[in-house]
Image (cartoon, rainbow, N blue to C red; front, side, top):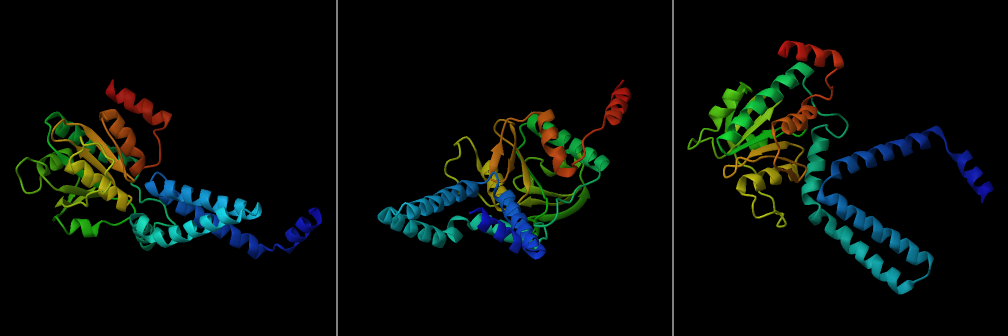
Length: 273
């Protein structure tokens, strides 16, 4: 056994190592795209069935192995249907070039300013129980969503967003799309989720936010019109009952990966004093 292993190692060249690294990188990127989605659970189930098929074949359990092989074959046929949202998102991700690059980020000062303005607007909307949907575009473009609303081009500010979501106006019921630090469209229509396991407390706004987050890598901030509750939807999941500080902590890494340094923290503390 050791002699065979040594012989196998000797046959491995530089190109073989390079080939393995490429495959490992692709598998890692696929896993990261499926992570925290419903697809990852289905993928684990499929891998368990493949492992059981291998074990039953090794143990010569012919009937069980035959059944497992048929089930795995049917699952592979059903994969394009079951994973339709995830496959669409993956292909769009590759088309946007996002498969090999990180998110487009703002510099630290711009990110701080944008998060502060978003927090001011959302907190005010929450206190007045004004319903709102704010979509934060990331790697995957949302031009098709923008086309369903009214195109706007302006620097994001709390006052600007509050004017967009004034009740009983044409833009109030739709979603506002933010690209970088600019508001690019408002009054946009979002796709509703098909997930029937969601709580009945969640209304159309929340279901639309989850629906979009299932199809792309955007983050959606929701303000409930009934309760004023602040929520965030990402990757098909929703995080509810956030306060101002939690919202800022959630949004900051989306726009800038850099954390506040000790020097910057001291300077900010002195400015407040």
